[in-house]
Length: 181
Image (cartoon, rainbow, N blue to C red; front, side):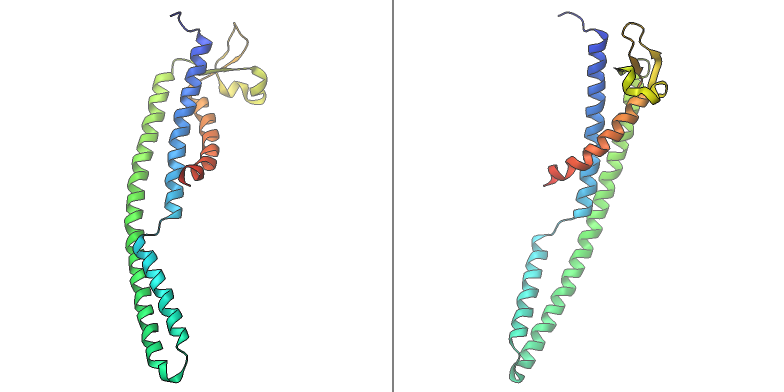
């Protein structure tokens, strides 16, 4: 197989870095979205159905002769509401600790991935971009200036991580709800 030319290798490196950063941000957004949404257990659904049924039955008993039975049903519904509140509190505490644990693992993974990318691509450019695309900020994003052979701006890993992080955060905010749907 013929060796790859440097621009093709740089293009693959740029795409690889972007996809890796994007994957980390999508996972982060999915975790945040799952934390915000929460979930309802079967037991909570059953309790809610039982409460509404008890309240319907108690409201149907509106005559003076059935007042005692209606009051009993209302007390039973109130007791089930307290049980539901306790169940929701225990679920919230358990999920918060789980989300915190996953969040810490994801943050450590993100730091490790970024660190490995910086170490891997520190001495080599990640991408070459036409000069007109980076017009006002060309010097900030360039790595050792402009490629003499092509006249394109050579982008290093730090600016490329900055750019791909911003883009992937925006994409992940749009993609995470699709994955969790």
